[in-house]
Image 1 (tube, helix red, strand yellow):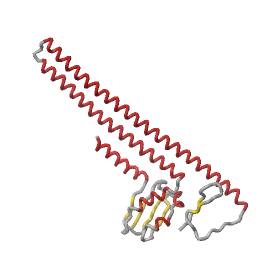
Image 2 (cartoon, one colour):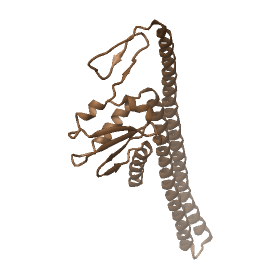
Image 3 (cartoon, rainbow, N blue to C red):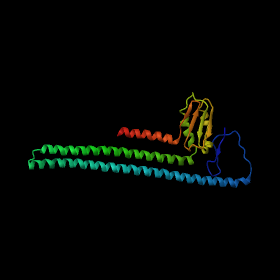
Image 4 (tube, rainbow, N blue to C red):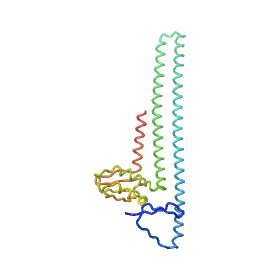
Length: 253
């Protein structure tokens, strides 16, 4: 199994993730400047990515808050319109009744009932439209939140490569002792950051291989065994989350 040694800081201090039994270093002073330049460049890239991530998270919160604020404004306006219609209903009822009395109409009662029915239908139609609008706005916010989550995760994986270990761990937790010949597929750039020994400790039959798959996104993880495969793409997980959230919206409508 491959052992990965990566720099944790650019100050000359290094952290070894997987402790190899021996380490050897070639004393080549000519290589030092290039390594230093490489580390400086890597540091600048990481700082830039973290800045992008921070801004993405801020933008995400701002967009969601604006969407929720807009939804609240629409609902508030609709509620106000409903109250206005109810107030007009009472006013029209009184006005029609008074006119009927003054003019001595024989069919005054029928006219009042007709007006009441029209208003009741209008209010019912308005309430149905208001309910549909509330549901649509909630669904729009959920769609937006899921899209933003996808973007934030993509950016985070650019700087926090070891996040792939949590994703793999979640997938392997669904694999029981009946599964054999386990193959875990991830994006090629994340393969070196997999803490393989961490997973060997939890898999009784240590027949597990980690394979690079260029067709996968950085947040994807596909597990294949003798009993079949398990879908672990980021889009699939986000779709499941979105489906559950939309179910809750429908249940509360």
